[in-house]
Length: 240
Image (cartoon, rainbow, N blue to C red; front, side):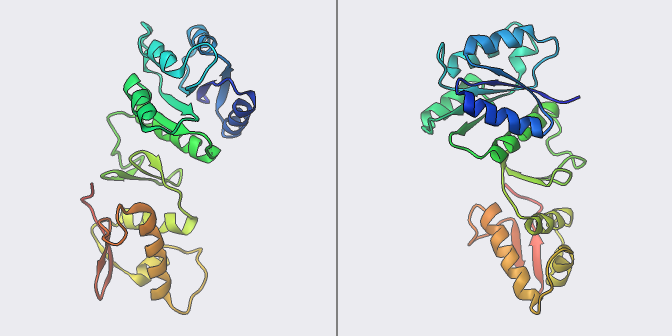
């Protein structure tokens, strides 16, 4: 059964864009133009809404008020529904206030639909398995970094990290061999779709340099992918 998403957004063009994209990705979408309309849909639905995309700026009440009403609902299903707050404001104060009000995530306009989709999936995963964030059957998790083999997704602090196919294959191989020292030939074989190369060592080093730039807090002092001089690389098992 497809997940039900409620969009509370007064911009019809943006709402249609989000709705079309989510529908393409097999979500059932409902749309409200005002905060009160969104609250009425929540109360009227026979089956609970799985996630709400909530705009901060609405014509009748702001998103903070809507969020507060949802979290204060006496309906145990309604008050726990995940909320992704959507706004043109990028101010840190608004973001913190939204999270304090009970929003689960926050994304600023303009945004890429793919990023919104990734955030929705991450929030839904957290709510579906709140006590199994480190489940190896669903993800390979190392501190703040998680690799999801089935969906080919990677997150840090539950925020999506965009990787190429080769980068994901490389990271997944590292994650499934965490703690082991891997030579460049092994890593090259982990990317079977890669083009042939006359200099495998150099090609792997370039791939790892680019991967570090995406997943390391400080690529110049990597804590996840460690260089083992004269041998290869090691993916750290203990990460923060």
